[in-house]
Image (cartoon, helix red, strand yellow):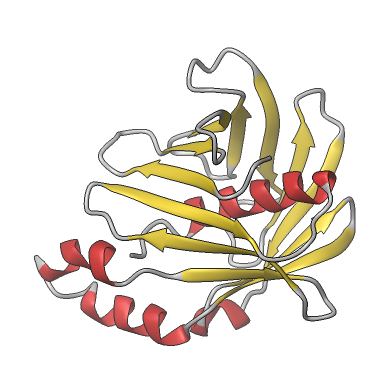
Amino acid sequence: MQFPLRISFRLLTLIPQLDVRDAGGASIGHVRQKLFALKEDVTVYSDDTLSRPIYTIRADRIIDFTANYAFAEANGRPIGRLRRQGMRSLWRAHYMIGLGDAPVFEVREESAWVRLADSIVGQIPFVSFLTGYFLNPKYLIGRSDGSMVLRMTKRPALFETDFEIEQLGPILPEEQVVALLGLMMIILLERSRG
């Protein structure tokens, strides 16, 4: 993958969709989330034609604050997982991404104040529509030793949500895959904000 990556989330569609492109504009993946599912079941396709599934993301339980989301290749071979850190995610988003069963990355929101402001301003009629332009969360993705490898930043937008993922440190190709799958799921889970 060539960084920075760009993830576009279409807001004005019936079915939530993400499109992921690398720095050269090449498609890395396209996500179309299933509607009205009690358990999250997301398929990642190679592009927006939806002709070739490449990964799946499945929750281990019905809608829950501490659900685990398992990543697998299209053939069913497990490759990693995402876990929301329950109560720690109330103040600011906090997740763990694992490669296989071993936790590799910690994802946390950079500023709890942006989350708080978004929660308050988001309750004001008509003004809440503009929060997506002014209140833009940033997420840091780091290793357990404290070294940062990626940063995901929401870009100001009104009708589409754009995220940019920049590389801050060395990351292996197989780690890039689970990190990207984790970040796509985080966008789907946190989509009501900003």
